Length: 145
Image (cartoon, rainbow, N blue to C red):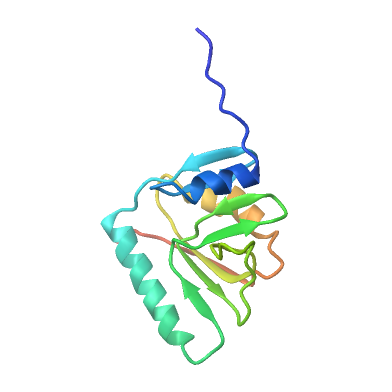
């Protein structure tokens, strides 16, 4: 039995597929990775953090985005959807579709058992390739006992 090979996708092919898709996928090194749905707890944390940051930065030239704003790490070619993103007064976007941010100041990820090692490791390494990034915040979903 032979293994099925995934076709290599260019960044342009990924964006073309992703912009028409009914669900979100991340992209890295020619592959798309479907994202699973978030739990109720994850969504509540994300909404609370997004609304709190929005209130905090309301009087400043910042924009706060929820998990639907795609971010590109140009250095590594990673396209990803952080849980919360804050950008300064001039968002830099990849193209005229206005759906891929290039210059986040703050990226916030809510940890889950399936993503924690990646969020703390390889993903954090790639995020460090963003010249604009000043803060990377990880939030645990568990309640201390």
